[in-house]
Length: 279
Image 1 (tube, rainbow, N blue to C red):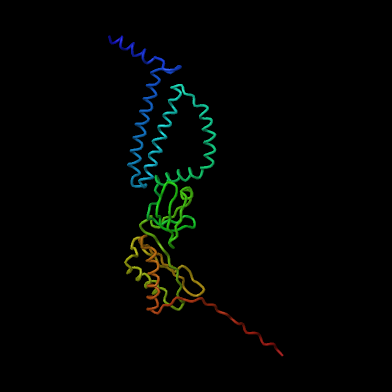
Image 2 (cartoon, helix red, strand yellow; image 1 turned 30 degrees about the horizontal axis):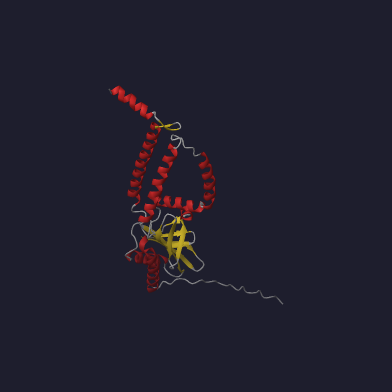
C-alpha cells in the first residue's frame, strides 16, 4: 500500500503541466517563494527593531517595504528558469533601461546609500552641533536623502547625505570636555609670577572650569611689548562658548584690580646722534 502511494506521488510530481514544466517544478518554485517571504519578513523585523529609534516612522516603513520587495523579486527571478520562463529579452531591455535610469539617478542612489551608512554608523544625531566644510550649526532633521542643519545665525541648510558622508564632520560636543586657550600679554614692568598666580586663582574659582584635565598657565614667549602668557582651560562641551566668553573678562578685571595691565603694542625708536664735523 505504501509503495503504491509512493509511486502515485512520483507520477503526480512528474505530471507535465505545460512544455517541460512538471508539478514538482511548480512545487519547488512555490517553496522557494515561501522561504524567501519568511526570510524577508525576518530581515524586516530585525531592521525594525534596530532602526526604530534612529529613523522617522514613515522613512522606516518605506525602507522595510523596499527590502521586502527586493528579496521577493530576487526569489522570483531565481525560480523563473525552473518554470521555463525565459527572461533574457526582458533582462536585456531592463538592463538598457536600468543603465539609463542609473546615470540619471546616480546622485539619488548615492544619497540614499550614504543615508543608510550614516544611520548605521551614527556619527551625528538630531540636536548635535556639527561643522561640515563651511556650514556650522545644529542638526534639525536627518532623512534617508539629506540632513537639515540650522546654522548659528538661523539659516536653513540642506546637506545631501552623499556630501555629508564623504566630508570631514566635526562634532564639537561629541566629547564630554573641550579645551580653549587664551593668549594675553602683560607689561615687562609687571610681576609675571604674580600674574600667573592671579590667572590660576580665577580659573580655579570658576565653577565650570574643570580640575581634571588640569588647567595650565605659563609664559609662552617674550613678545615685543611684554610677557606673552598662555592659559589652557578645559570645560564641559555644552557650556564651552559661554565659559570662554565669560572667563576672559574676569581674568582681565582681576589683573587690573591687582595693578597688572595688558600691554599695548610698543615700539622704541632710536635716533642716533650725528657726529660733529671737525673744522
